[in-house]
Image (cartoon, rainbow, N blue to C red; front, side, top):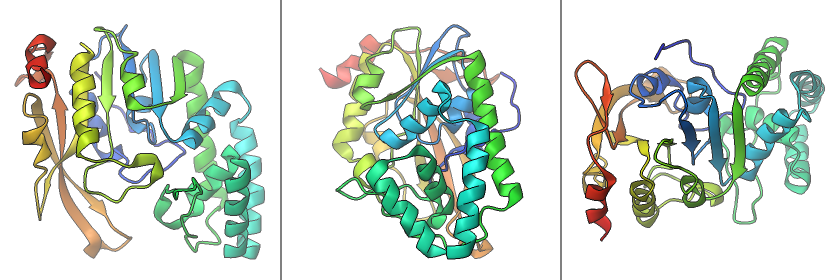
Length: 301
């Protein structure tokens, strides 16, 4: 599989896999006619860069799904995005935080996908967070000049690229649980999972615990499909014990990389990411399926 420049989607998500997309792509076991199934879509950065012919993208956050469904249907276009952000950006520059909170309140009432994009690109640290009442509650990022001409063009071009992907591929976007999504897989499908990490801060739309992780493992094993799971292996302070406890039947590949907490170089943190698969990659990087799900079912009998 050719490793090209990584496309960054218009919706930002904390924990986005942009930096390790090439690592993920080169270790996929995906036939040309396989159905790509992604139960934890998030930003969509992995699936959008793999660009399979047939795909199901799912998430329990309805605002992400609605944003892409409106692009797919033509209700939102790159032209509409540019016009909206030029107007909203001008108001933000004039009114600063007052306008941000005005849009946030409006979004929590009407759930307009354009407002969702604006909030995602002007809130603190590009976070997506909702309270128990399902209200978006991320504070303002304090960048009144955020929507420069170049920045708007960058986002518009990202949407244009999404439009092109829709034109040549058969993709569905569904708001539903990972259990229901994985049930759509047959033995020819490929499932890519990037669930929330256990122990991290979560909100209504991505709460996750040990039982969730175990349920995910069980439904993946039952699917008879090939799968890849993204998770973290270790950092400078601790390791992910659940890899050995829950996913010990999987093959594991790891890659070191850095992430930033804030904008300063001193806040550059190291982490080792892990890819867990029910197939192995040999030394020549040619994937081979090595386990039958019948063997794995012993774990849950």
